[in-house]
Amino acid sequence: MAKRDYYETLGCDRGADETVLKASYRKLAMKWHPDRNQGDAEAEVMFKEVNEAYEVLKDPQKRAAYDRFGHAAFENGGGGPGFGNDFASSFADIFDDLFGGAMGRGRGGGGGQQRGRGSDLRYNMEITLEEAFVGKTAQIKIPTSVACEACNGSGAKPGTQPKACRTCGGAGKIRHAQGFFTLERTCPTCQGRGSVIEDPCGACAGAGRVTRERTLSVQIPPGVEDGTRIRLGGEGEAGVRGGPAGDLYIFLSIEQHAFFQREGADLYCRVPISMVTAALGGAVEVPTIDGDKTKVKIPEGTQSQKRFRLSGKGMPILRSRSAGDMYVQVVVETPQKLTKRQRELLAEFDKESSGETHPESAGFFAKVKEFFQGAAGEGA
Image 1 (cartoon, rainbow, N blue to C red):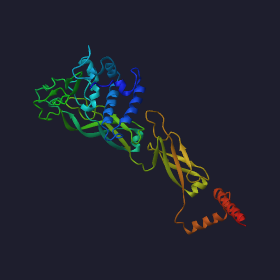
Image 2 (image 1 turned 180 degrees about the horizontal axis):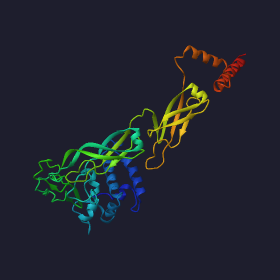
Image 3 (image 1 turned 60 degrees about the vertical axis):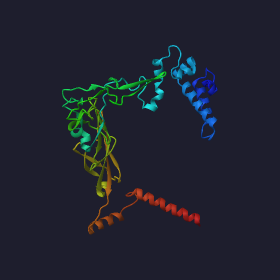
Image 4 (image 1 turned 180 degrees about the vertical axis):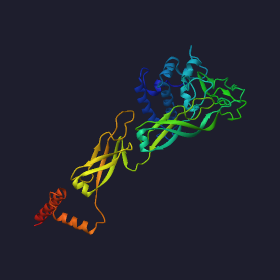
C-alpha cells in the first residue's frame, strides 16, 4: 500500500510555513492520540502517520529532500540522482537520542585519540576577618590525580606506545551505512580514544595518572567576602591519558569575629557605655579592623542604640582602592548591684528630674494620660 503524501497527511499545502505545519500537527496529534482513542486501531495508525509526516517536514533539510524525491528519499536502497550517503549523513542527528548523541557530522568534534579532561576539584578554606581585610598567601595541601611520571601520562608501559584500535582503525568512531543514512557511534573497543593499550604501565595500571598530595599557593586578595570563589585553572585532576587537567575552586568562609559584624564592605561594632557617660558626654576607645584603635566622642545626652559613623574604617572593596565604613552603635548600660549611697544619689536625682531631663519618657506618658482621659470621656 502506497504511503500518503506527507502534506496531505497534515492537511497543509506544499508552501505552508513552519507555523502552519506545527499548528496542524498539534491539532491532528490531539485528535488521534491513543489516550483519546483507546482500542481504536485506525486512530493508532493515523497518529503514527501524522508523527512521521511532521518529523520530516519540520526539518528544512529533510523537507527539501522530500520535496525533491518524495518517500524514496527515506527508503532503504532508494533515492534520486545525486542523493547518496554523503547527503544522507546530514540526517543522522535524528538518531542521536537512540545512540547516545555520538552520531552525525559536526557532533562531538573530530575522531581519534580523544583524551578525557580531568575533573574539577573543590577546596573549602576558612579565614579570619582580619585576613580578609589585608589579604594573604595561603599554602594548601590537596590529594589529587596527577600525570603518571613513569609513562608521562600515556598509560602505556615505558618504552611502548598505545596502538591504533583495530576495530575503528584509530578513528574512535564506527560508521555504518543504512540506506541513505550513515550512522556513527563511539567505538566500543577504545571508547572513542582511537587507541588501545596492550601493555599498560605498572605504576598507574594504564590510567595515565596517579594520586598524590600536592602543595599549592593561593593568593587571597583584600576585601573577599564569605562565599567568595577563587579559581585556579588547570590545578584540578589530571586528564585521562594526557588529557587536559581540570580546575581547582577555592571556596572561602570567614570566621565570626569577636567585635565586628560585616555587611558588605561596612563593619558594625556594638559598644556598651555607662549611664553617666551617656548623660554627661565623654569619649570611648574602640578597636578597628586594622589592629589599631580610635576614639569616638559621645555627646551629652546620647541615647541607647545611637550610631556613630567612622568613614573609611570598614573593609576594602574588592578590586578597588575604596573602603567601606565602620559604625559604632552605643548601648547605654543600666547600673547593677548599687551601694546604699549610690541608691540615695539616684533617688535624689529622680526627685529633681523633670520633663526636660527625660523628654522622651515624659512625652510618652503624657500621650498615655491623654489616651485614657479620652477613653473615659467617651464612656461617660
